[in-house]
Amino acid sequence: MTLTELLADRSRTNGAEILVQIVDTAGSTPRSVGDAMVVSESSTHGTIGGGTVEHLAIEAARDVLSGGEAPGLRTFDLERGGNTGMVCGGTMTVSVTPLERPPRLVIAGGGHIGVALSALAVRCGYHVTVIDDRESYATAERFDDDVTVVMDGYATALDAMTLTETTAVAVATRSSTFDREALASALDGAAGYLGVVASETKAAHILDGLRDDGYSARALQQIRAPVGLTLGGTGPEHVALSILAELTMDLHDASPERATACSLDELVVVRGGGDLASGVCYRLHEACFPVVITEQSQPTVVRRLVAYGTAIDTGKITVGGVTARRVTSLDGAIRTLVDGAIPVIEDPDASCVDSLAPHAVVDAILPKGRFDTGTRRDAAPNVIGLGPGFSAGEDVDAVVETHRGHQLGRVYYDGTTDPFDGTPGERGGVTTERVLRAPTAGAWEPTAEIGELVEAGTVVGFVEDVPVEAQISGLLRGVLADGRTVDAGMKLGDVDPRGNDVDPATISDKALCVGGGVLSALLALDQ
Image 1 (tube, rainbow, N blue to C red):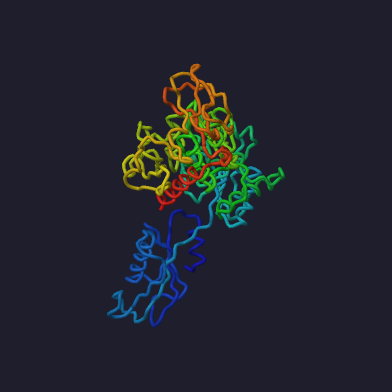
Image 2: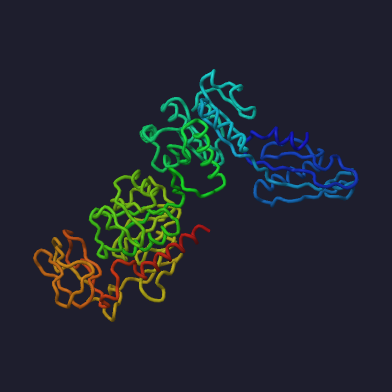
């Protein structure tokens, strides 16, 4: 069998295979240069001469399949005293190379779009299978000679196929019911690309049905609905082109903006939306990690101009050129990520982690060792804590130092950070005096705004009619939102003695440093 015949014979198979081909001979050998065979884990096709030399070549190929050996050349001595035990009297060198399969496309639906898409895909080098449950549509005469046509139920046919990360499934049946069945089978089979031809209204109806069937928001996010890039045109050929353009873009890891897609493979859930947490979110967002923030219903953030958690109160906030929006559902969170923004959801216990299955969880609640936030190491593949209260290697994978000083932003993969001594960080020689605290429990009513310059003794608000005075002069850098119920001693705000030298609407150097530590930890944990 020639190499061309061999590869044509194997073109529609699934699974990893190795091509073993004779590239050089000397003396007497059972086969000539160019002869080849294909080896999988359980079978072989073709021959390079049989006997011990072929047996050794098959072993070499399977060593490459298992990852035990690298691809490359193997030389066999076919004479007495050689490495084969054969006595042909020559030598044979073979190349052992993983066999790259052409990309595979399965089209559910043999109508006009299926015909156009299959023809274009074949010309672009795809191996194409078309499924239709109608005998008049599932006829070979309607399709290119290289298209495999299957007449069966869409779900039945897809369930019988081996779908992999390199398999694309495009759904274009005659009804939303069949579309949904085909998509469900493709999701169950873990196809690498899924799309459905539909209007936005029909697509929403199909996704609602799949959601009712129990498919998670994360699973449904994989579906391009509507499928294809927005290229213009409405005919079958135009639709086929838009689908194949998007599919080819994925295949080659290209980066044109998609009409509907957002990868959650590196999703990070950040617990807490305060100013330090926001520095973390900003760093991650700038490094192209999709981020979801979980917050409580009444955030206790004081530096509200630089805290994405403020979106819970205001609906949205932009910090450092990055916008965060309040969302009320996981579907809303995913839509916000698709729009390039950061979703903030009311979820103080981060229960969304179970549904989103994120790549990482960052606990930025900053318990400082005073209470257990509930974050555990098994919450995600990578779990990172900020500051005191976490132990790397036990309840989290890594801890980032939040205490100002030489260790700020340092990542610990074993043990804990510096303990919290109860003293706020120093500003202009001032520590405890710069922090505003509640004199009693009750409702907080601020009378000054963030960014105002205040003098020592200035009343900046009241808790149950008890005045709260600034203890030092400076710029009011943070103030707790109006109407919050507070406990005695709770932080209400802070005054920076540096005055107008500080911009209360700019992410601090400390927050960015801590964010850099989290980014470094994520990259290191992924190694």
